[in-house]
Structure formats: C-alpha cells, structure tokens
Amino acid sequence: MAIVGPQSQALAAIAKANGRILASNDYVTIARSDDADFVARLYAAGALLVLDAEQAGGCSGLPPVPSLRAKRSNPSLG
Image 1 (cartoon, rainbow, N blue to C red):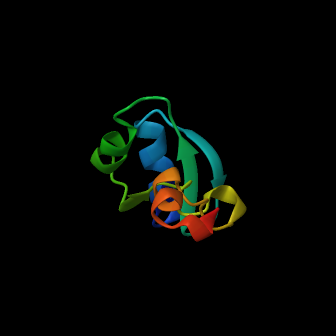
Image 2 (cartoon, helix red, strand yellow):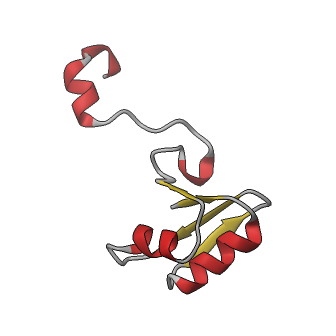
C-alpha cells in the first residue's frame, strides 16, 4: 500500500497497524501486510490516504500493466 501524508504520521500508522515498511520519503510511504484488514487498520491508526501501490505503478514508478479484462475489451492492448 502507498500511504500518502507526512512521513512521521504514515510510519506511526504502519507501526500501529502491524505493517512492514518497504520504502519511505517525505510524503509517500510504501508498506505491506498479509492481513486482509490492513487498509482499515491504517485509517484507524491515523493514515490520511491509502492507495494500492501496485495499481499506482508500484515502487518502480512504471504505469500499471493492463488487466486481463482491459485486454479482452480492447484487443489492441495485446
């Protein structure tokens, strides 16, 4: 997950939500957890905004890979 907001607030929320920090800068922190309710726990712990890091391009910054559904509806995607 990508947690958007001040680094100190994101780190505190991740710690309270029992997540693992993968990368962090001043305004975006990448974290993960195997728990299904991780996003809800991040918000409960004070996270301002939580996004799916993979859908946003992940840590690589690359655009997301088109889904199988998008490929089926648009054959030009391969």
